[in-house]
Image 1 (tube, rainbow, N blue to C red):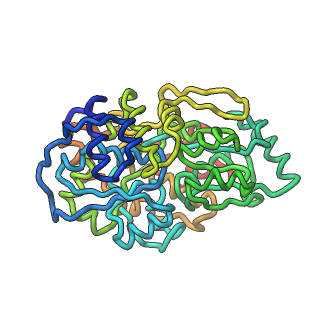
Image 2: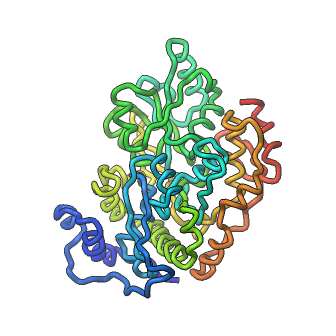
Image 3: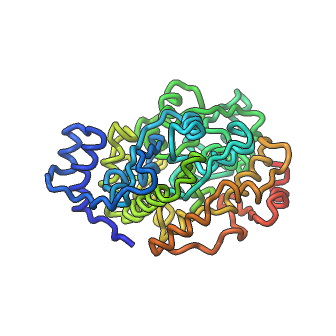
Length: 423
């Protein structure tokens, strides 16, 4: 297994690989260093077809492993020619993956199951999952007039929101039907006891959340960082709860594939190895300041690097005079010794069960068949073995949701819904 890059390696590489790929302005170059000595790993030879591989991303902090694999020269190291492209919305990512305009993408873990079951796309359309990219690090931001809900206070949130609903209909935003942000929002609402049928839930692309809240289009939103932190920074709301407070170490973004590209195994393995090494690099907290500078740039997330850095390090200014909360072991994770990256079929089953719970599906889907079809677990195991990365042994075992103590049993997805009592 290749060793992670040092900070010095990064500073050199970001000044060379990043400039070549994206024509980064001189101000950014000055921030990252200006060494002319190339430290990009030697190309180990092209694999498969040798075609350029296009990987899409949405401007979110958790695109970091896909972006940093480019900036650190890791795609080249593993013999694949990759272009990373900023995309406008999750619906656009879906459409481009299905059409082949994108070979792969930084993508919501729930999207392939949402699309395949017809919740968020044409039923039966296949978007395979090669690996997970990160866990944790999303959040729910509420408007300032709901600040009495506090931080992680479920009872206070119930009281404040029910009181507000007497006066008017509340509107909440998420990013894609059946995606992770949608599930965190709906699951939180269920735990709080909010009748979802009495609220409006709308879809907004992640980078547009803050501006929509500013003009009063919604009372709260569920999204990934840095847009919760930016909402606090711009004083439009406060962080009420983070996704790791709902389900610690939950699956979040995945490397999702165009069906044809999923069959170009040699190239796909090169992409996965590059991203896995970048994930290891990112989980060294000493590297996160540099990562924040890179992904904060306009070409990527286009947000203040310090806001990205703080929440990458688990330091949350909550806003609303609620002070600061520091996450010590459950901030955004990219690798965690391989525990993050292994794609679990049980997690796919959980998402689909929640589609039934929240009325997206009238009947239970064939949980096992869909999970087997869309999750490329065997390929991931092959890549992990070649990189000496451990494979977790917890798939298909029951797990607990932190916010309400509910237990999901992947051997009985339908039965697991009974504990919610029709919520």
